Image (tube, helix red, strand yellow):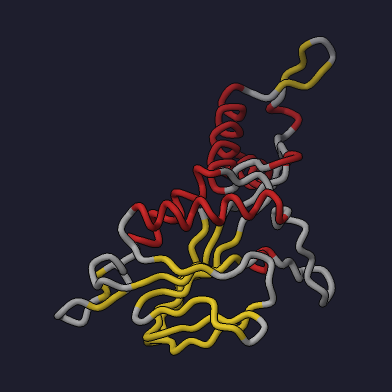
Length: 207
C-alpha cells in the first residue's frame, strides 16, 4: 500500500507523514489513527534501544574501550618505567559522562572473556584468561573525541577526571578479581607506550 509506505517513511524520519484524509479531529486537533500510533511507538522503541538516552536527553553509546592484542608492551612516564606486560592485551579505556561502576564492571568482564587469541586450530577462540595473558589498562578520554564539526576534536562527552578516575580504578580492580593480571598507567599523566602488536588485532567495544 503506497499510503502505508509513505506513513512509515515519514515516521522513520520523525515526521508523521499522514495524509489529511487519514486523520480525524478531536477538540479541533488532529488525531492519528490507532494503527499509525502503534507503528510510531514501535519505531520509537527500536530507535531508543539503539541509542539510549543520556544526560540532558542526549543519545549516546556509553563506556567504551579499544583492545589490542600484543606480544609485549611497556609504559613509561617522564622516562621512568611504570608498567610492563608480556603476551596479552593493551586496553585503552574511555569513560563517558553519566557512566557508573556498573558499566566499568561490564567492560572489565568483556575484556577478560573477549576471545581474540587463536586456539590450536588457528581460530580466534581463546580469551586472555585462557592463554594466561596480562592486561595493560590505560585511561583514554580521547576515545570520545568528536571531529565531525571542524578539525579540532571536541571532548565534551568525556567524563571529568575526578569522576572518571574512580571508574577506571573499579575496572582495574574487577579485572583482577576475575583472575587477570592487570598493569595500570598513571591516570591523567603524559604516558609513552611501546608495544609489539600481534596480528594486528584491534577490537572496539561500546556498551
